[in-house]
Length: 105
Image (cartoon, rainbow, N blue to C red; front, side):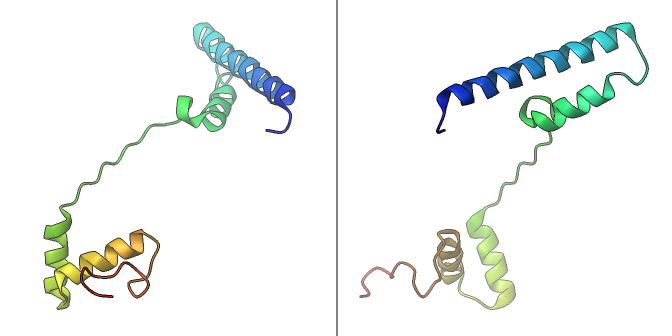
């Protein structure tokens, strides 16, 4: 951030290294040489995981009101208060210091 020329040089060096590693992996795969591409693949995977890492995706969906009703019923709590407390926690507030209920000072 402080030195744009240095940042550009680092970016260029990383691009050159990535290109070299990709070429090594392709070359080894084409030649079918044993045990020659794994190190380069490992480095690519760990240095640029967004491009070469394993991609696992987990999608979670929850019906908040239904889940709040279930938890509240199991715990003897008011579902609206449970949701308000959860929202306060997610907002980084404690329920006591969180937003006031409408109509209350």
